[in-house]
Image: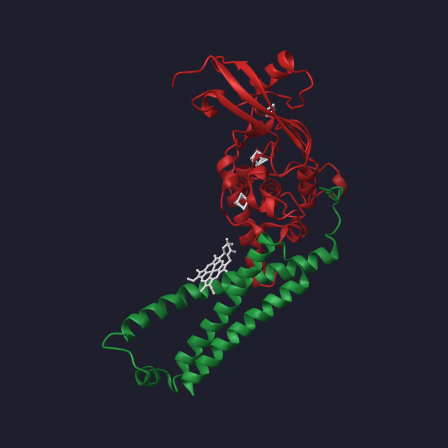
Length: 130
Length: 245
Ligand code: HEM
Ligand code: SF4
Ligand code: SF4
Ligand code: FES
């Protein structure tokens, strides 16, 4: 192990370290905020499922609830966005620890994957609304 | 528990590459693991390398892996860790380069303390000058209590050797350095908060910790680095959300 030795400087933290650390902190903040959103959304979702399946579930019944309803659209869009971002950032953390996949490029790829996943969910939510 | 008359001690010999040597050591009442190592070095094999200084749990230099777990050896009684047939296995601390035998190289560990800005930076007296007057820090204040909670660290690296994230991520500063940073963040006399928080943010810092608490469970001084790290995360969370950094 070749640790880079640094004296206990009192001067500012290296700029590029700071920029990277801030970007990583932002990812972490997004993951925690989306976790909070998910905790709420999953509860709403489960309650919805349990009530919806009573007396059978039909496509017509679902659409009658969601079509033209802005509240459900907003809920599902938020849910999809949170799940996409939360899952991708979580997988990023696992990949960095398990297989050493790290760096800016990887982060951008994970962010893209998260937004794409969210995009599919959002498209489905729009399908239910329109 | 009936105690065996002698202990069978397997001791790591070599550096990163090496093997175990076995020694028979007489069992004694109130014997510590460090006593066992010292007996081997004095009576059986003077070439054995290991490290200690104070023998009373103050200096932090005697930590080793004892039957698979990092411990301070000067205050670990054999009776507490030995298995039923009197076997002890001693290795150097994990997650650190091995110098020789039971002596691990703590340089990366202390380098990370300085990378985490583990040095006090007096607010009133930049450049290390002695301040004019004593700072009054009420013992009951919240920040003082947070700082007190982590101040007794002896730098033994038991937590560092017990942390999986250190094993997975070479850059990770580790529990002791982050505990030290949190102590200083709460020191009202310190003026380095912003830079210190920058230094401990991100993947090399507090945000890689999974709060699994091995550090807290194994710290021989009963400190709680895991909570200290949670404190850093909390500070950075609000500073980031509220645009304070
Ligand atoms: C009730 C909703 C949820 C909550 C409260 C939640 C909370 C969390 C928290 C706190 C972490 C960080 C764990 C750590 O740092 O050790 C995490 C990680 C993770 N989450 Fe979630 N999560 C939720 C739902 C989901 C969903 C729906 C997915 C899948 C899309 C997901 C995928 C992941 C992954 C892959 C990780 C990374 C594992 C890790 O870092 O240890 N989570 N979650
Ligand atoms: S709580 Fe964090 S620092 Fe402590 S052992 Fe677990 S991952 Fe490492
Ligand atoms: S926090 Fe505890 S285990 Fe870690 S170096 Fe300090 S005293 Fe040792
Ligand atoms: S020899 Fe000093 S702490 Fe063990």
